[in-house]
Length: 417
Image 1 (cartoon, one colour):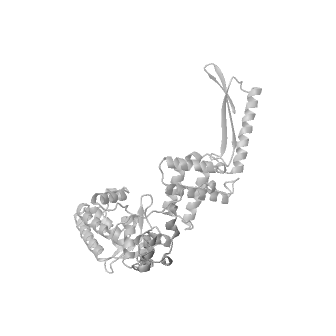
Image 2 (image 1 turned 90 degrees about the horizontal axis):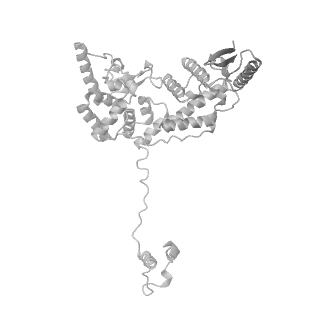
Image 3 (image 1 turned 180 degrees about the vertical axis):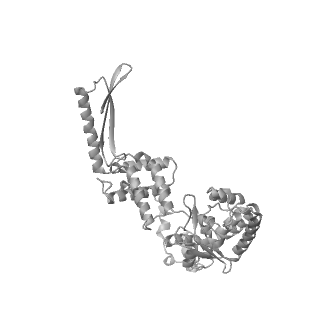
């Protein structure tokens, strides 16, 4: 029944509840409940109040049908569509990237979930970004969330889930552009110091850091590296899988395998690790028999960047994150004359834009560019000396004729001295 009479400490209260079906509402139905004092159930006033509530709820339904579904429902439709496209290999993002995007959207746009998507304005988006700044979120993260919101709105407009607007509300909201500062990388002497001190003080991490520098593998690729990936005859490593906590073992970031040749220092490390591995297997104490590298607890917990940065600070070299080992691999190869396509192929880079960033870091294309510039002048002659003496107000008429003096107005004007 839409009307219900209750007695609250001697006060008669009437609860009126009305609801209508609405496919654009997250629950499929819009419900409205109000409480009125001293109104009799079934009276003319009660029936009038019920009709008012029905008109209000019909107005809300009509508006929802005009502007489309709620933001929460739109997020669900977008994620479902994206996953279907991923299964058909038609989506531009990886599963991990999509998962991170949806997690961030559900976290930061939680107040919008029950709001009709068509009602979300540029003002709402601006308020969201201000909240993120108050939480000390980086400009890069804000820019990423802005891009993900834009993608969801474009999807909703394209498939007619969102009505009443023609473009995303993010279009009129400006954010700070991401300024790509120079990445801190290790010099050759710092790399040598890292490996030397690492071998002495952090022997477990030493193997991981050395593999990162000598192979250029990403963090997940190193974690998933197996003994079956190493060709001991041709001294080659096949990088064909990666790892993350959500999906476990998966393909590499680019979805393609690649070969990395084993240099002499890396070969010595592999032989050493192989001996340790065989010894632990014989003793029955090998925790990860199929994998090449040890797995310290901090690496399993995803704190490898923090560990490396702190160690670099302790030994007095440039503090870097774990992924920078990959940048060191690229820049050092470029400095040694390896061509860009070869570095891209062995390192698994597809984007020339990303690779050009490493080219700039290495400085190979900048070295010697300014060498042709040389503006060193010859020693001034007698005529020039006469001119300088005149300008310096040490000129005397007896030393040279007035016709030889070239006046410089910039020196004569009192305001320009």
